[in-house]
Length: 89
Picture: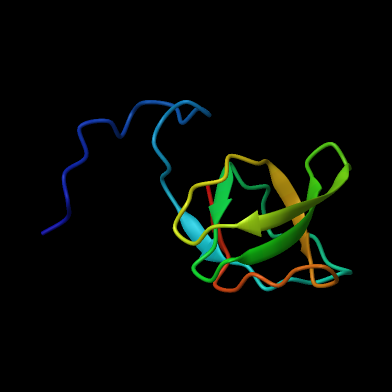
């Protein structure tokens, strides 16, 4: 039996709950399949990202299990030491 969703007809916005996610493999060349609303890491470390507006940013010392509300289009391999990166949409 399918799960009932009381909010199936509401549009998803940036202030609403996260509705999906995907694994991120850092890559210096390729963009993510979709821009994130946020991301998190399961292994602490640094994450080098390209934001939605094209700005490259090094995020140092991220903590595992914390939700980071960045609109990211790419996670770079160079400069990224964190592991278990999850994109949230």
